[in-house]
Length: 293
Length: 246
Image 1 (cartoon, helix red, strand yellow):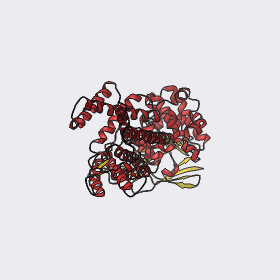
Image 2: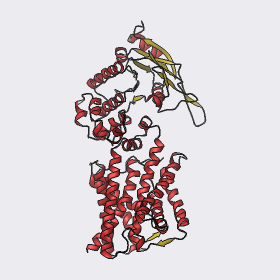
Image 3: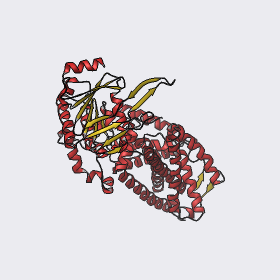
Image 4: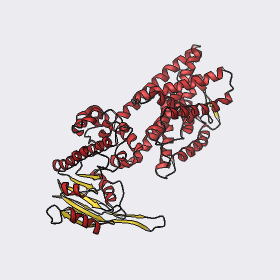
C-alpha cells in the first residue's frame, strides 16, 4: 500500500511540473500552447542522450530544461514573427518534435539503466521513496522560483501584456521578448517533467508525449478550482500539484477497478469534460481570455 | 516653454486600398503646465491623435517627434501616459490595484524591480493620492472594482508615470459627478506640479471652457482651429458654432 501511495505521489509530482508549464502558457501568457506534447518527449530524449554521454543525472535534468526552452522559443517565434496562430504554432511544433526526437534518439525508444537514474541502483519501495525526495525538492525549487518571478516587475509585466494587449506598448518596448521568455520557461519545465518521467518509466519513447497536454490541463484546472479566488502564486502551484496527484490517484483507482489501460486516454478526456462542467456550474472561467491569434 | 509635436500622419485604408480616414496635423505646441482640450465631431481623429502620441498606433509614412524640454523623443521614449475611454482597457483586471500601480511607477534600482511590492510601498500610497476606497482595496483584483473605481485607478496609474505628456481620452465617461470634479482638478494640478502638458479629448463644451487653457478643434482629420483662453471666441456660443461649422 505504501509503495502504491508513493507511486501515485511521485507520478503526480512529475505531472505537476507538466501542469506548471501549461499553467504558465495558458494562464499567465493566455497562449494556448500545444508544444508540451513535444517538449515533454524532447526533455526525456535530452536526458537519455546526456546521461549516455556520461553527464551526471541531475545535470542531465537541467540540460533537458534548455532543450525544452528552445522548443518554446521556436513556437513563440512562429507566432510572434510569422504570425501563425498560437494553437497552430504549438501543434506544428509538437508534430515536428516527434520527428526531431526520433532523429536524435535514432530509434523509437531507448531504455535507461538503473544506474543512469537520479536515484541510482536501489530498487523497490526505497527507490520510490528516494525519488519522491528528489521530486519534492525539484518541485519546491520551481515553486519558489516561479513565485519569486511572479512578484517581480517582469513577472507582473508578462501577466499584464498577455491580459491586456492594449496597454502592452506602454509597459514594454519588447513585448515579443516577454512572450518568448515565458514560453521558454514553460516548455523548459515541461521538458524537466519529461526527463523525470523517465525515472519512473526507465525508457524514453517518442510516443510518450501524445495527449499529455490534456493531463497537464487537468492538473492545472483542478488546482485552480481548489484555489478559487486565492491569487498567491505559490499556493496555486501547490494546489496544481495536489490536482495532478488527485488525477493520478483517480487513474490508479480505475486500474484497480480493472479497467484496461487502453481506456486511460478516454477517461482523461471524460475527466476534462467533468471539470469543464464543474467550472461552468460554479461560474468560474479558468480559461478566459485565451489568445487564438 | 512648450512641448512640440510633429509628424502626426495616419491613413486608414480599406482592404481594396481605398483611404477611409486620413489624419494629418501640422506641428502642434502645448504650453508646459497647461491643460488643452481637443474637441470635434465623432470620427474627427481626436482619439487617433492620442493613440499616435502614446505609441499605441504607428504613423503612416511619418515619424512622430515630440520635443520636450528641448530634447526630441519618439512616443515610446517619451513614455506618454494615457487614459482611454473604456475603463477595462486601462487596467489589468486580473492584477490587484497595487500591482497595476507598480506597472506604471518608475523604478530606479534593480532591487525595486525584484521586490517592487515591499520597496515601492510608499510610492503606491502616494500614487493613490488619498483615495480612501482604493487605499482599502490595494490587494484586491481590479475585476472586483466598479467601472468608476477602475477609471480612477487608471487615472492615478497614469499620473504615477510622471510623464511630461498626459493624454486623457473621454476619461470621465464612467465616473460619477463628484469623482469627475475631483479628477478634473487632479488633472489641472498634475499639469502645474509636473510642468506637464495634459491633453483631454472631450465632447463637453462647458467643462472645456471651465478647465482648458487652450482648445483645439479637429475636423475630419485636420486641425480646424485653436482658441486661447483670452480669445473673444472663448464662450459656449462661439465654441458650438466653431465645432459645428468645422
